[in-house]
Length: 206
Image 1 (cartoon, rainbow, N blue to C red):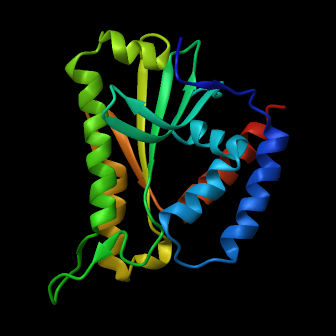
Image 2 (image 1 turned 90 degrees about the vertical axis):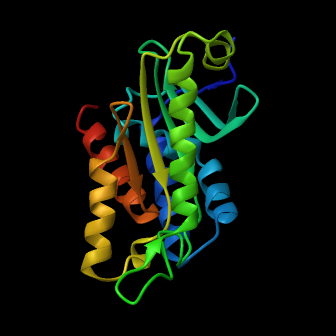
């Protein structure tokens, strides 16, 4: 028993859903979390493309808004049942101050939504590390978790101002790990680009 919904990964459907999302995305600038997450939830095949971005084998399990141990909520979890590999993803707003907010005269501080998303990731990792054989956790995931991957998707490229903010963001997105697992941070623009790349790569194997 688990809280997941089985899904049959379909690259043709994923491509169609990604195309429609890109059309919606191109018509919007900065946008709130509720609106953009609703668009992603309406496209589960597209969401599965994040599996390859997180180095999770082709997902056959999906769950939006998964609650772990009755306390911690995960916006999206993708899983491969046979590999017992799961990617946990937190969505934050795509607003102007999501990544950086007002700071000093020299630089801006990290945005509160990004810090909130990263804090969620730390808590997820702690839940697993604290009691890896916990019965409630295994019941939620339908068995043990062999591999975990984490991601926070927040903000837009346009919310990064100047070369110093870009370097700070790139450092944080590439060099931060939690419990030995890479914790990816990407903008929604990054998400679309990486989904496109994943789709192109996977289509070469068909």
